[in-house]
Length: 119
Image (cartoon, rainbow, N blue to C red; front, side, top):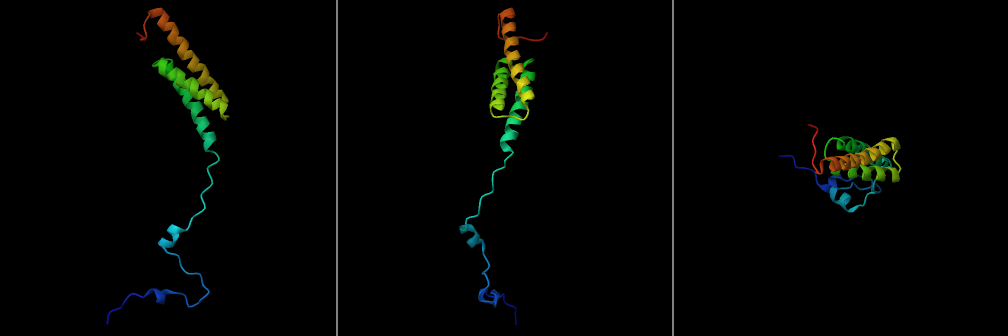
């Protein structure tokens, strides 16, 4: 004689008051409480904005001032408004973004062209 798998009734607990086992189908219909949002996410976002503002302002002094300068200014402003924990870094990003545009204006007025090179 071959062994047969036990039926559902044989798996049930002999205790009639015991809680029935849940199945995957039961779990799909039961709503689960949602996880609370990460409280540090907005702070990380503003800190990231401050750092990216600083880096884009720094790189913008050498290349692509017209693009990176306004990006640095905008990100620094957003980071400062949203209360970053790195206000110094955001302030430097703001200053470097403005410096990008000032350098671009000086080079445009000197060369009378939008393009420039170091050599």
